[in-house]
Amino acid sequence: MFACSDIIFYDTLANLSISLPVDNNPKVCYSLIVKTKDLLGLKELTADEIGEILDLSAEMKQLLLSGHKKSTRMAGKNVAHAFYEPSTRTAVSFDEAAKILGAVSCGMSVANSAAAKKGENLMDTAKVLSAMKFDVIVIRHQSAGAPHFIAKHVTASVVNAGDGRNEHPTQALLDMLTMKERFGKLKGLKVAIVGDVKNSRVARSNIYGLSKMGAEIRIACPDTLLFSGSDDMSKNYSVKFFTNPEDAVRDADVVMALRLQLERMSGGLVPSIAEYHTLYGVDDRLLSFAKKDCLVMHPGPVNRGVELATSVMDSERSLIDDQVTSGVAVRMAVLTLLTGCKEVRP
Ligand code: ASP
Ligand code: ASP
Image 1 (cartoon, helix red, strand yellow):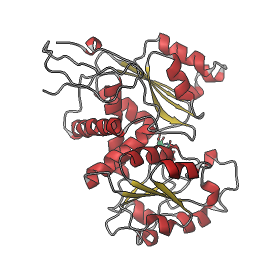
Image 2 (cartoon, protein in one colour):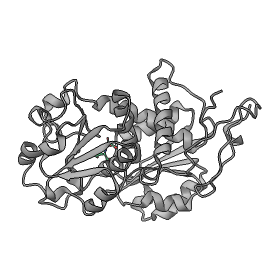
Image 3 (cartoon, helix red, strand yellow):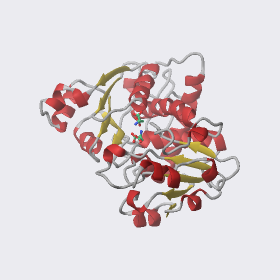
Image 4 (cartoon, helix red, strand yellow):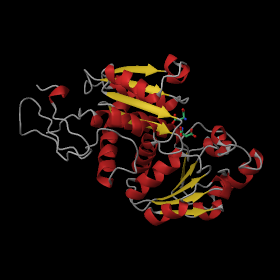
């Protein structure tokens, strides 16, 4: 039996296919589509790569939902979690994913760590992590591009768990998995995203990912919460921007509300929280413009009664809990693929 370390590795540029020999039988090989060392964003991935991650995530979800949440696919591997911004579900789900797969999982509260407090720069922290021989470094950072910078300088695989306002690829993947399971497809789905798009890495990753998978995205937000470059975005991706949420949600299959990211606002972008809720809060009235069986999502954490009315959040339309479960499955798939530990199927 070959161990994970027997797998042939490659890097992003060497467009080699990967062979995963099992039981010394060279015929049983699996050619992976995902060939990158790192997962930094969905902007860089192809539809086939996203499709492969979603397929494997669906398998991982079955394992997660089974009574036996244990695998040895990542035995002998180790994963570091470096979160420079607070996180509950993302950090815990990466940790859970690594542990279920049999990897050694090391959480680092870097935001309060000696490194950050004593002035060590990001590059030096990355070198330390590299010297500790981690196979994967999962990083969340307040600066856009920080994971990309680290990825260039370490041999470990780097997973972006959210970089500033740029991307949050595993969040969009888990959103897509949740939708795909409910609707059986992503192609042709009408997805309305309502809220603080300017500050949202979730919105950007979903625009890239959903658009590549053939969905139609409509964004609704006040002008003050729109990012610059939206015109270019509409030229390159299947996305339209609206200020009136009723126009965005018309006939939508899914309405995704985004959190008002008060920690990233320098002030004055919304007149008041109450007014925001009246105009952009996702409630039963707004949903009456969508398809009758339209489902509702939110990446969390939710400001209850602000982005989402309590009646909607607690209703059967809400996929929020399922999104969290999908998050563990997607992170299991991503860790597996990046470390080349995908189990070979005959
Ligand atoms: N910001 C949320 C949390 O920390 C979800 C995430 O981490 O992406 O719970
Ligand atoms: N959890 C998501 C993120 O970390 C969304 C949010 O925090 O509102 O970007």
